[in-house]
Image (cartoon, rainbow, N blue to C red):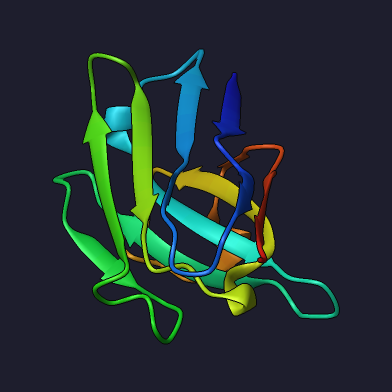
Length: 123
């Protein structure tokens, strides 16, 4: 049972990036999938969450209009697409899945975690 986060990298301010979170060993379609991040010197924070029926909610300020998310049950994968990236978005991004709660920003409620992927926004 594993979640694999990928797609991070260096991007200039105003640029875009697509991350992915792939599950193996379980069916991701039964789970809410959230993204959390921790920037340098910052506490971890919830970013956004996609529910089982592909509805989207944002936990972090400033994500509305900048982050969309899709999921494909065939690939057992969730894809957050981030645009208009800012230096303040620099962080390690983690995906997490939980089967019980809907749109929870409480990291303690998540059953499975990916290993994190680094996003650096800099010119």
